[in-house]
Image (cartoon, rainbow, N blue to C red):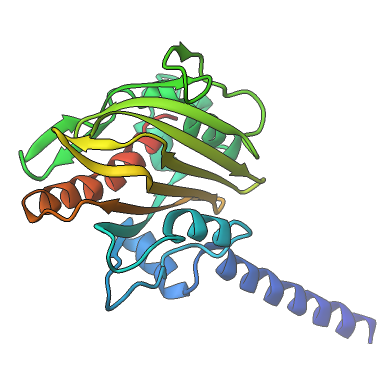
Length: 265
């Protein structure tokens, strides 16, 4: 009888554990399987399908969704989500460090990476228009508050949970802009939420009003690797001559952010 109860409890524990794993990482186990096989799944939100089916189901799901898509409608210029998966062994292999055995792939390392705003300078993205790699951020550094543009050192010590930082970045498409970046963190994941505080311009045209470009990033440790979810919503001007080019720029930005994160270990 005691043995039966032990077995029964073990089965129950394994059931809860497996359900927890599936619930932790994505709404659908098929999505987990697909992204682990392909490395990336991309979904553009539109009038026919505005569901965020790639968003991992975690304690920060609602917060992530509200930040990126809280003001979403089919009238916005661009809204999309992408889910990536990368093994820790690949992070070690791609690290620029010579001593590969000492590469830190912990969630604490991830927390420091996403707060290393100055290291976003020089981030590359693939330009679909020019058919070549270009620099996404020509300048990037932390500022003390939105009213100051003087650079201050990155703030990477301790946990990122609950922290709010401000950044000044000069971006390839939109030029200089001020951003608010908020963080959440637990033992298995880090959340990074970005929002433009200044208007973003495309040449002489104001393309994005303050607060209308929102990006949410979830980086989730599954033991062997990381799921990286990026959601973006940009309420841009509706000018057909610019819209297609800007949308391509936003889509390339997703891959650029993921690539940048994976090359910082």
